[in-house]
Image (cartoon, rainbow, N blue to C red; front, top):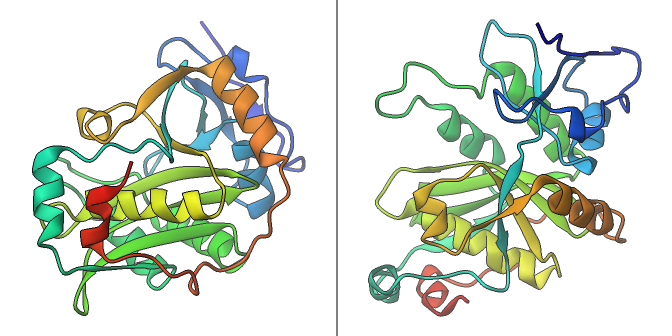
Amino acid sequence: MIRLPFLDPDRAEAFPPVERALAEPDGLLAAGGDLSPERLLAAYRRGVFPWFSDGEPILWWSPSRRTVFDTAAMHVPRRLARWLRGCDWTIRADSAFGAVMRACAAPRAKQRGTWISAEMIAAYERLHALGHAHSVEAWDGDRLVGGVYGVALGRMFFGESMFSAATNGSKVALLGLARALRERDVPLLDAQVASDHLFTLGAFELPRGEFCTRVARLVAAPASAGPWRGQRLPPARELALSR
């Protein structure tokens, strides 16, 4: 029987080496600890993220393969590009972080619950207040129709979740995020786990070792934390040209 390491509550930096993550379930590394900003940032620097449901201890993961985007090589499928050229949505950054998180937390079709608990929302809102967590949103007038949020460290961005309240809402937000990251000289966007939806937009997989090597280099690069709200982003129709 494999015993899962429990994190020292007094040492935010104390994570097992990612090579010790379980093969089944893939990537489960440790349990316990807390969701303090110090521990969350320490986790991301190591290529580790929290993912757990209500009633479970905090669980920490580093899967054997990581789904990522090269922010300079996003793919816009032909059908989506045609749709975007007629889209009058606007894109903003950090104008509705809490609303994006709560929309991501809403149970999806065929799901009984959500892993984005009130505890998780409070933790990432603290990171947002400190200038580390950010959202990019798609707006149809004053209506929030899509969004994505995650954590920025150095020249690396760790995506956490996204939502759609209208057709293509999450795709527009994700393409908008990639544009924002390119302008900030952030080359790699972590999408955590694979899905067909992500691969249609240019996602690919990296083995854990290569991913963590890239992360270590990128998070060490100088970059200033702070709000993104003042960043000017193009209208959705211009994302048809994203590459």
